[in-house]
Image 1 (cartoon, rainbow, N blue to C red):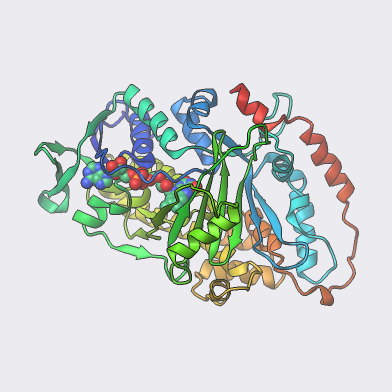
Image 2 (spheres, rainbow, N blue to C red):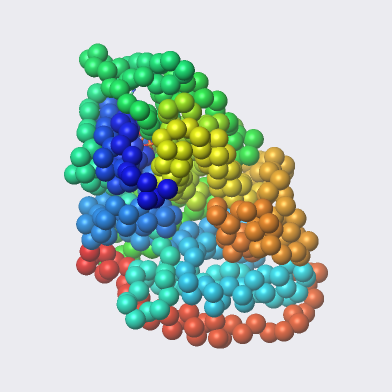
Amino acid sequence: MRDAPPLSPRVVVLGGGTAGWMAACLFAARWPRARVTVVEAPEIGIVGVGEGSTPQLRALFARLGIAEDAWMPAADATYKTGIRFDGWSARAGYSSYFHPFASAIDLHTAGAFHACALARRTGRAVDAHPDRFFLNTRLAEAHRAPIAPEHFPFEVGYGYHFDAHKVGAVLRDHALAQGVVHVAARVDTVELGDGGDIAALILAGGERLTGDIFVDASGFRSVIAQGALGVRFVPFARNLFCDRAVTLPTPRKAGAPIDAHTTATALSSGWAWAIPLTSRTGNGYVYASDHLSADAAETELRRHLGLLDADVAARHLTMKVGRVEEAWHANCLAIGLAQGFIEPLEATALHLTQTTVERFIDAYEEGQGTPARRDTFNAEIARRFEGVRDYIVAHYRLNQRHDTDFWHANAANNHLSDDLKAIMTAWFTGRDVAAEVTRRDLAGFYSALSWEVLFAGYSTFPDDARLRPALAPTNTAAIDRLLDGCLLNFGDHAAALARR
Ligand SMILES: Cc1cc2nc3c(=O)[nH]c(=O)nc-3n(C[C@H](O)[C@H](O)[C@H](O)COP(=O)(O)OP(=O)(O)OC[C@H]3O[C@@H](n4cnc5c(N)ncnc54)[C@H](O)[C@@H]3O)c2cc1C
């Protein structure tokens, strides 16, 4: 459908958070003749805590033609090569592992990792910790920026960390420059028309905003989708227990290296993130309110950060975890937190927003501006949410930490999807995880390699006492030589950011 003439619907976006402005930019880019309006109530404000991304955000900025030099310094952004999981396993040698974003050089080392993991899970005494095998892991350990010189022949995968308010402002400025109209007003009423479509949004001053497509980006309030249209919310509470967060920023230490990765540290009833920005470190504790009070969570986070006596204000948030049954309902597309949220362990929220908007534009074009492709689109987006959810559930189900009621409850949680059960069965029975991921068409959410890194990172292997000798030695020296040689091509992270 890309050669059809550009469509020109009137698009009204309710919400000026990251999701709303991201959507406005994408609509304006794909449909230059469309009239796009963003309405937001400044007095309500944005949630402002999304600070980590997947590599997909790179594609967004590339599509919008916004160079890293232009947006990264403006948003205090840093590079992200992956996520380090600390303290999730009590097994000796596995207290920490790294989930790297994929890079093309992995083709040369993933086979060795896969072979080691297969040998270990089928009872051989082979070191299968994933940290040895991947370039991005080494970049993170050495505080290098994942920016390769032109002569380096492999694409390196990376995402970003950023200040959510500032990245929103970058997207807003870009959208306005593309002709998007900004209305600062509160929406008081959603007016329904014939056939259940939205006819207009009525602003606090009485003004009516009419449109063809209404995008609900109003955050957890979900004013249009869950509010006016009553779209059912499918909670994930039986799969994922964390429903609260408390945040506490810390200043960046002058002269200290800047991490090029997120750290996710397991605590008593959830986990704490540390997200390095050029200006500060964003910290937060995601926890389950069934297991910990807000006061106790704040104290535990303060202790974790060494801030017990510091006079820094904490911010407490409630998370509504799950998804709307239909992201596209009537003439409304729900995105961002209004569409749903999977807790931030893999920082997937903006990724899901971007995918939802891009796939919606495809589906709308394929249907020639009709809802002909709506059901297919909704099924695809729902499946994507559940594919991402399952990978997060796997972290909680498969880690080797059992010291509190929270971790016991997660280890005993059998509300697992058929897809997740099938992948776990493949791993634990020594079968091919990649074949199962392919057979179930799950690679678009998390690759087989990501699954294997998770299983191996948590050491879900037979007991050491039962291991038999390895059949063949692993050529670890060759892997070290290759990856350490590659590392010579990459410069210091802080220095690379200072040059931006
Ligand atoms: C603890 C936590 C950690 C997170 N970490 C990450 C992460 O690392 N990576 C990631 O990708 N995502 C993360 N997220 C999610 C991320 O914060 C959101 O996906 C992102 O900020 C987009 O939010 P939003 O735009 O949907 O909603 P919001 O930022 O809440 O914006 C809602 C907008 O709607 C407007 N609005 C609401 N009601 C009305 C009304 N009646 N009239 C007019 N305007 C209205 C508000 O003014 C505001 O502009 C995290 C979320 C939480 C809770």
